[in-house]
Each structure stands twice: as C-alpha cells, then as structure tokens.
Length: 366
Image (cartoon, rainbow, N blue to C red; front, side, top):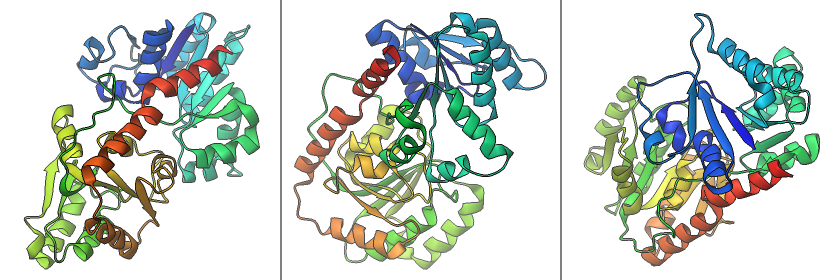
C-alpha cells in the first residue's frame, strides 16, 4: 500500500501528532510505504532521525503564489502511484486535492479525510452557502472519513453512513508498558496557548482562586502567554496577592522530558477550553496518571474520562462549577498513587497510537 499524507503546514512537532504518527505506524507495523508531503516550514526536522525513523518526507518546491498550487501539482503528477491519499480538515485545499486525485486516479484508490473537527466545525458543514457546499462536496469525495470523538462520529454516521469511522487521536509512547509508579503532588496543571479566547485561561484563574482558600495547592500553567492577556494576569495577581507564589507560569516547554515531569507530578490536569477539536493534552495527562477536569466544549473529554471514573466535565465558562470540582478533588481522600496508575493503564490500552492505527489499517485494507 502506498500511503501519502499531504499536509502543507508540516513542522517537526507534527511528526509526533496524528499527522506523523499515523503514516509512521502504518509503515513500521504493517509495511506500508508511507510518505509525508509538505512545504519545508522549518530548517530541521529532528524527529525524522529517531522517533519516526524510516518515514519518508518529501518537501515541495515553492511556486511564488500559493502552497496549495504546489500540492495540487503534486497530486496531478503522482495520483496513479498513490493507493491512499490522506488529507486533513474540511477546507478548500482538501477539496481540490481529493477532486484532482479522483479525476486522475482512474482505478481504485482511496481518499482518506481526517477531520479534526469540533462542534462548531460540524455546524459549519451544513451552512447554506458556498463554504458549506465545498465542505459537503469534500465529504462526498472522500472514501474514508475519520473523526476524533464519539459525539461527532454518531452525528456524522447518520448523515454519511459507514464511511465515517471513529478514530481518536492518540499519544506518543516510548516503552512497552505503562508506567505505574507515581509520586503525585498537590498541583493542578494546564498546558496550552494561555490567554487565547478558546483556552479560557481567565476562567481557570478565577476558579482556582475560588478553591485555593485553606489549602496549599498550586496551579502550574505551561505554554506561551498571549501579550494581550498579560494585563489580566497582573490585575488578577494584584487582587489575589496570597496566590502569587502558588500560581506558576513556566512559559513554553519544548523539552519532552521536562514537560513529562510536570505531568507526572500533577494530581489534576485541567483543560477549561471553550472549544477544542480534540485536546491531545488530555491524553498526555492521562498517560501520566492525571485526573482530568475539562468542559463540554471539549468533546473528546467524554471519551477519555471513562464515564466519570477518571475525570469531571463541567460547562464552559462556569467558574463556580469548575471551582467546585477543584474543591471536591482537593478534599479527596483517594490514594492518588493507585488512582494515577489506573488512569495511566487505561490510557495506555485505549489511546496509544498502536491500537488506534490498527483499526484504521483494517478499514483501509478492506
């Protein structure tokens, strides 16, 4: 099988996400001839040397106009040699790539569309305008469509039938089994682009302030901070001076081992987002034994939290309910070490890339 992922915005970090891990594991475990096709967006792609060693990478030449034209030319020239063309997102480029592929691939061949869709994206699919029309035509052109959450797969299967499959995102794992020894601390952790509207960092800070009285729990926020949000932080800390030493902004952490250490130390991981297509940080947290707290704006939360056994879900923007969830967990008498091992084991068996890609391979093969 010749499997080509056409993703023009590829950076090194994408190689350990769905864009890179799916073709890599197809190649490593099933002998698929996998090729990544992109513009060259960074000087170096070090993960190609170790973490996804053996995965082919092809960089397209620029054309002076639009990268999409380079992608279209690639599909036109190579369609006959591609057994599966994998594209991402419901947008004009995916429509054009699949349209050319179907026109040029006279025999067989599958177009695989990975949606990376959130609830807003589902609504936009059915807009009665040219944008909605292009999105629906893209869905029609694809032979296999995967969506990352059961909430959306249930909706889409009703509209598009069995060519829609539930393929969640996974986490990158080294080693042959989940880790079981955890030494958890009284830390609430979040990871993301802090201060952007979708991430609702303002809600998180207010909820933590409402729960932090009478205890010594800390809130650790990992990620770059939006410049426009810095004034909010300053005002917030001026009003809550007693929390200055208990709210820690680390900045962006690119070192995987250093970030993993924060995951391993935290008892609670919170993703208070107003909207997410998936929220892969939830998997990274669960794989390190963190109890999850997220919102209904993160549809993957319903799939990952195991019917409430390993997490709480609250409405977006509900400061009171988020704060109450923190208080309940802060006062928990649970054995956090044993709980962490159980959460990590669950994530290992259900959300590693290996079993996820195994399911996708069977669909593509058959």
